[in-house]
Image (tube, rainbow, N blue to C red; front, side, top):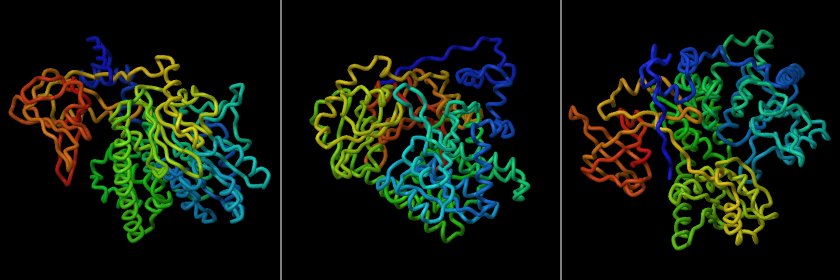
Length: 571
């Protein structure tokens, strides 16, 4: 159960009130913005205010090495992660090589299931045998010490560009690969924006390269801005904080996507039923990213790359059709596996941590299934399958429990490997251990400090009335978009509002809709996807006043525009 806190009211003489409405001023202050200068920068970020790429440690040396490879016609392999951060990053670097007419390169993306995350020696052996002299990683490699050592031994140069945290040794000291590393999170790097995604990091490398060699290769001024479609997709998909430079990337990324020259991306947006003119961050996060990720979950990540790299209408049509088919299969498989998981859990006594799985469940959807189980049972969830004689799985958190801390707190030798971050992770263990895993995780959970699993507190941005809902209010709020981590979508309280209808809709009645009436007789629709009326703190009923917590959103479906509320909770 979430906790809610009302935001502190503004003082009557607050600086922001001299330029902005009281609501926008309140929203800005709630996001840590207190001056008109900072508000201008936030509302209308300037691309020219991006940080100097050469502030990033080792970036200058990376651009020099890439330039050397190009001038000597040494084959380059772009080695990218298989998700919606790594794949767009590969497209960014490939776009640079294409515009300077360097064709002696290829792109390698590891298979999610057959190879897994990381830079693999087996892959490097193939890459080297194919004539590659320089490997450039994207969104991967910071923990790849075996791969780095192999490259050293076999005279294969490696540049690691990544944004994940480096490993630490037993004394807590940073343990970096012994090669050229471009990563804003490494110690000694003073780059002002350490929270870039993987594509953001390689984009800074491209910026730096063009700052130095633009005239050498006759690249038009500002050409790299066309790459912001990929940077925007990756920044939103990877859920990095949409503040500072990341906000700029997402803000301009959405603008560039609307004008993108990438045939496959335009086709994907069209076939996904998204209005490109009204495209926003939610269309990326819920409409585009899952389809790009479906390639690696259900087949090979190169299926997503083919969409973003399509060179003509025929290629784009075929690639998009196949990707959407993979995504549809992914959705079916998630639904089937989730149903099986619910069946296994139906008659079990559940603790604070749930472990559920089957040897034959497909690994690529386990994290998605875990998220569904968290939504229903509101507990921490570990979902597993069997692969290569081991148990491998994904986990998702609830109520702020730090999953890495939780797994660290289990008995020694419980896991073969585990990793991730606070909200999501992965793990592997011996087959015999799976019988004890749930008990051990619940025992470990009981030892964690209470603040490790406190319920999330959501800030209510403002109390408004149903009569306030109109296009003008929506356009005011949209000044603060794109929304995401660090800049949450405004949460509004509607007090003592009375439903005039309460319905469930969808093929299996899996969604909730409630209608309210404004004083002018117009109706306001509020919806909640994959919820029933009983899922809320207070069950909504016809004619009984409720307190509604909701976001205001604009929906376009089959050409029909709708201003509506998206229900967060009813209390």
